[in-house]
Image 1 (cartoon, rainbow, N blue to C red):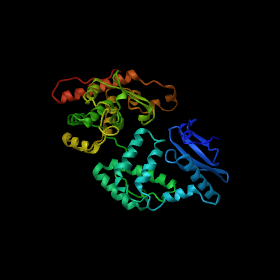
Image 2: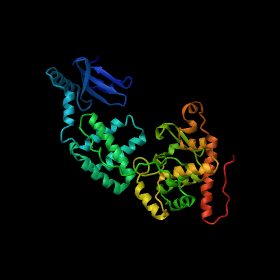
Image 3: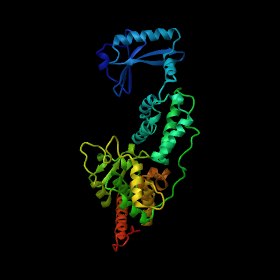
Length: 396
């Protein structure tokens, strides 16, 4: 217990992740100091068998004396049967509570348990895809409203993007229900835009050539080429940071940037390195691609323009490049466990008990396989131009 002053509330240290300092002059008033640096006044009281807490105000907004006066008033109200926590909950479910306001509350909460890339996508969906809902009261958003906006998203961004935005919105309303803000999830009952079936499309050699040649001299075009040459996931390359490019011709993805939360090294073939070397230097920018916050975005329009040039007879996705590389490497003689390691898959040869004892990352084998694949792509391009070349295979 300490005597809180306007000076000490700014200087008392945090111990661990969350520290409470009881005010010696006002029983029930505490200074709360979090590891992230935030400082606030709270009250704490016992209700039955449980300890209850409620925020009084932030340090810097309230002086110590103002916090004491407010705390005393709240504590007297509690003695008279008034529950400040319930009062705040009732205020949040007011008919005037706006969707955009709750999004601002939701995203920082989810940031604690989401990977940076997942949080980036959720932020994109809620702030941009669902921006037309921001000024609507939460209780006024029904299934008809959501379905209408989904149709707009499908037209503007495509069915896959619409389904991802739909999933994010559903998760948001699930949280809101748990918080007691709304009673129903208006996403339930709306239709998915894509079929949602597992794709099996493997691109033909001629299609790979057409895509490569149609790829523009832009960030999007270079991302497509790097995906074709490395087989990595779209967002891992689009969100590539300069700190992840190593001098030894390697992309080193940290655990927080991979789908399976495992660090992943991607050796770069001469062909892949050449594509990355074409990216213009952007002083002070942490990301290799893109111009705004985060990495590259704006896939839909860029792909539509490239598809018009490539002229493929069947639809294709960027993920097809990953599947095509895996299939093509197998045809060239690359062993399955090496392909899985390149794709950063934890299955098959590296799953279960075998995965516990087999910690090899197959660094040399991965580099040899990706070099072979780079030469394969280069050979396809040369043959398409009329050159007489021989296709290589990995030695058995």
